[in-house]
Length: 204
Image (cartoon, rainbow, N blue to C red):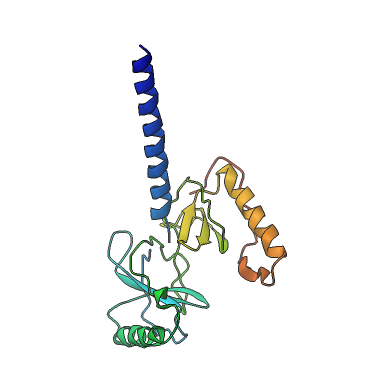
């Protein structure tokens, strides 16, 4: 009898560990894909780039990151290859060539489209806790196919998070407090003029 109880407890522990690993992996995969692309030339210097395969609603695209943000670019444009080659050459002369992302882990959608820029946004959200320190965050309103979300940026990338989770507000408040003690509090996006919702109902 004691043996059976011990076995059951062991199985329960394994199940909990497996669930934790699964939820952590899920949080990593719900991060910023492009649903439309821009054909205009990006003239700013690149900080990084990544290639995105077609996986509806996400489309085939090259995602350029500059100081102004992310751009969803049509990879068929002739200037794109030259831009990438120029960036790679520059990276070879720098200390950190790892700025070129070796993998496609983003699922960011283009929600805000104007004449100059097609930027990314979240099409799904994770409820898993982000334990890493934040580099920045931004709030995203619902604008189909993009959903209401809080986008956390860490060293590992972007996370699309359910804003109704109770830990989210605490995470943001902690980040804001830390920013007040640093030299560059501008890491908090100036576009964030609305608060994290506490309601349990998400608008669509």
